[in-house]
Image 1 (spheres, protein in one colour):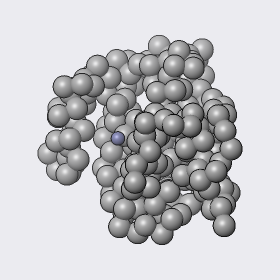
Image 2 (cartoon, rainbow, N blue to C red; image 1 turned 45 degrees about the vertical axis):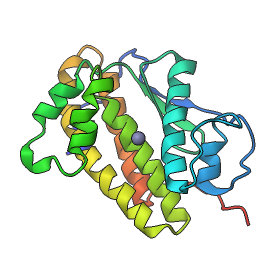
Image 3 (tube, rainbow, N blue to C red; image 1 turned 120 degrees about the vertical axis):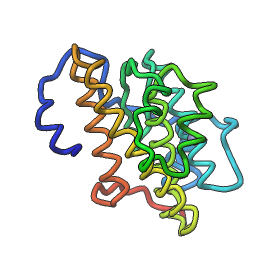
Length: 209
Ligand SMILES: [Zn+2]
C-alpha cells in the first residue's frame, strides 16, 4: 500500500518536511549502531541503560527531541548514519488515531501507546512514529549485537506500530492536503525504515573490536 501511495505523491510543496543531516557530538566510542546512536547526544546524557536495546531505544527518543530543538519543528526522527527527517504537525490527535484502528489490528502495544499515552501525548498522533523509529533503531542494535530475543521483541512491536502509522498516513492525507510534502516525507521515511529493518539498505558501522 505504502509504495503505491508514493506514486501519487510526487508533487513537492514548500513545507519543512525533509531529510536532515544530524552530525554526532563526539566519536563513536561504543562501536556499532549503538555507538552511532550514543554519539548523537552529549556525553553523560540520561538515556543510557544497562540493556543495550533499551539504551538504543531511549537514546533515539533523546535524539528525536534534539532534532526538534535544532530544527525548530514539532516532529523529528533519527534514522542512523547521521540521517534524520522532520515533519510538521499531523493535525491528527492520538485519540483519533486510536479510534480509527480496527479491533483486529490493535495488538499488544495498543493499550500502552494508543490509549495510556493519550495522557501525556494526545496532541499529535505522530507520537507513534517516534516509537516506531525508537523500536526500529533498537531492533537494528539488537540484531547487530546478537541479542536475538530483544531484537525479535523490538521488531514485533515495530511491526504493529508500522500498521498504526499506515492508518495514520491515510488520516493525515486530509490535514497534509495543502502541503503534500509532509505526507510524501512520512511515506518515504517509512519506506526507508522498512528497508533498513529488512537489511536492504546497508549502513556500514562496524562493531569496535
Ligand atoms: Zn519509546
